[in-house]
Every structure is written in structure tokens, then in C-alpha cells.
Image (tube, one colour):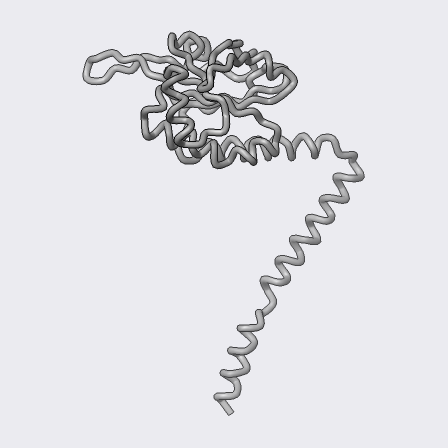
Length: 204
């Protein structure tokens, strides 16, 4: 996969509804691109379904989700409608875009050379720069991993924008909250007190 901190190669591809999509159309917005071989694979269907389940969270963080694979628009449309996929999946039938992103790779199995798409994902910032890559995307966890990274990244950015006084205030608030939690954990709960009283009554 193409390294982070590089400009993302542009593309101009049709989605499952034969709408033409360009990466430069999203300039000024953040984009998450996911790559896989074919939507016919059950593993790949599970991969994109996990993104579909979390699409509201991606929308909350203002992240556009786009997928790219080797199927035709017609092949994509039927399956996307059946699976209710709420984002664009682009048809890279000649695998040129996957080559540009370095996810179209050779695999040797029992001496036979095959070309496959490495299941992967990456994040692109508002300027078109790649700032996070997942070269071996986990089918089950990748969507959540991407969201977790986005949330942590946003929290770091928000922290950097705070004044020194505001940072000190937040630290004091967090310290007080930790002390309250520790204190409550050390105190006996109501059930513990009841058991203690019952045991005490039995000894009389």
C-alpha cells in the first residue's frame, strides 16, 4: 500500500449506480477508502457490512466512506441493494487505481502466480494527503479501528487548541474524578453492609 504522508492518487470511477466519482470532488473533506477484490466474496461482504453498520459514526466525524474493488457497476448494484450498503463502491475493472495505491499485488500459491487485491483501508485529509493506512485490514475490526483512531486524533487536536489554563483546569477535573472513583471503590457497598449486619446478627 502507498505510504502515508503522500498525496493520494486521484481517480475517476463509476459507482454501483453508474455515477462518476472523483477523489478531488472531496477536497476540503476527509475520506476513508477501503479496498477489496470482489463483492462476491463472503469475507468482503462482511468487511463492508461492518462499515455500513458504523456509517452514522463516520458521518458524525464527517468522514466520507468510499470502497474500490474489481467488480463492474452492474455486479455491485445487485449486491449493494441486497446488503443495503449506504456508501459508494467504485468499479476499478482494469485494476489501474488499485495499482496506483499499491494494493494490487502478486501472490504465489503452490508455485502459481495470482494477482489479488490486498484488503486494506486508508484515511485521507482535507488536502488529499494520506495520514493513516491499514495494510492488512481485519474483516471484523477494521471499521471500529478506523473510528477509534479518528476519535483519538480529534481529541489530540482539540487538546492542542486549548490554552494552558484550560489544560490545567481539565487535568484538575480529571484528577478529582479519579479520586471520587477510587474512593467509591474502597467504600463498602450497600449489599456488603447488609451481609455484614446479617452475619453480625447471627453471632448474637
